[in-house]
Image (cartoon, rainbow, N blue to C red):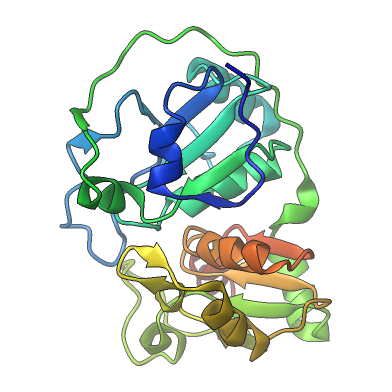
Length: 276
């Protein structure tokens, strides 16, 4: 069987089902608990032969002061090889919320130089809704892969860069948090984190790109982005901790925006380091 080359940022559950036997396919479960609703349990089932992508620990710099911090090339390479990922792997990543943390996993691979990767549109809920089989989550022996990460630093933005961009307005900064959080109408879910926004940022809640579990039609998405930015603009996406900002990065990529970066620390870092 010929090896898969994924050309689009997302694939459908029908597409995934029809390619389950591809030699170089790797399915990753990037599910995490929702920060705004931590009581919502992570699913105990998975798409057959999925491998768990430990976004919070194995693929984050846990020595950093803020959650889900971008890992080093060395750490990412080591952990990806443990998952049996190869240089030629065609990766489909999903989560059990629809599209939530899966976009972060997708963006991490892009930022580590691997473009043969896509998000499963609708995630596990859409897979189940379509009647496809699942299995109880299990850990299976995996042959070590030969993946080697090569960081593309332009895809990630950090505190000092965002500070300059905010002040000079060199970039359009778009915040994926809810409108209520963006406008300081409700407290942040993280204890002790102040309310507020990055100066000169705008708001596009990531959930506005979703209809139930699926991404909204491209034309509708286009209108939402067009209200905030032009195709030639330099974009920085932010959120609470760098997770749902990647949903906006996914949408922008689908629409053909090319100068995109994600603020890794997002509001958790900014709100902690900048006091007003």
